[in-house]
Image (cartoon, rainbow, N blue to C red):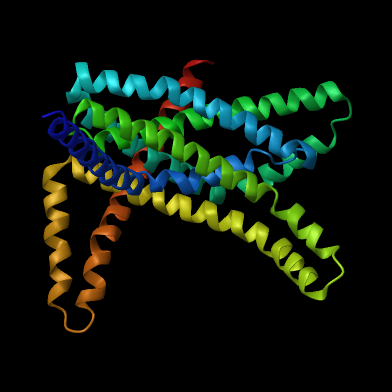
Amino acid sequence: MAAGSLLTLLDDIATLLDDVSLMTKVAAKKTAGVLGDDLALNAQQVTGVRANRELPIVWAVAKGSLRNKLILVPAALLISVIAPWLITPLLMVGGAFLCYEGAEKLAHKFLQGGAEASKEDVRAAAQLKSKEERLAFEKDKIKGAVRTDFILSAEIIAITLGSVASASFTQQVVVLAIIAIAITAVVYGLVAGIVKLDDLGVYLTERTTQFAQSIGRGILWAAPYLMKLLSIVGTIAMFLVGGSILTHGVPFIHHAIEDLAELPGDIPGVGAIIQPLTPMLLNFGCGLIAGAVVLGVVQLIKKLRSGSGH
């Protein structure tokens, strides 16, 4: 009897773990749109910082990220218990914010000279002389990075909660905890590696073998392009994921995209290639339009506020 109860318990645990594993994979895929941008943003947060202070700052931001998630995960679970109807609206808000962030990045890049602003940060940091000034600069960097992380973490938690909304409370707790810890470890582990790529390149160029020197020069050449690629991929993913969240929240748009996705299947030869890309392109387009609209509204509100302040 006891052996049978033990086997039943083990079977239940195995089933729970299997379900949690599946849901965690689904949640991880849905949050992928935030990760590319999260990596790029956090890697850029150490711009202008001395090389020997890069890893301590990344570690400080990682601890801040964990504190953010200690607030966000219980809040998300509380919402799922007392107001589950809020999950979809929160997801829609998160999706709209993702699209807005993507549109803001494009506007900042092409309309406001984002690259020049980054160079100004480096020049300002280089002018700091005293230890107190450098510490204040680092604290500002850490505070800004933790604030940015709070927004990105909130998006990740909201998307994860939406993907496990129909699961049991225990499964929700486990999946949210796994995603929160795993994403923090992955993001800041990769950020630490990215910000030290140039140091690795310099180290290899100083080795005696020609092969090591070649690898080092290759790393130094590729590092800036990797940052640009991360930023581009992150921006595209924001529109894709944000647009997908928004279209899933509006049934008639979601069904229209499904119907349109079926059309290329009838095209001989290329139908099998185009068909899977159609919903992605449509979600991207919806995300781009939504981001532009939200950005326009935000800019209009800012102008009205500044006008009323005079």
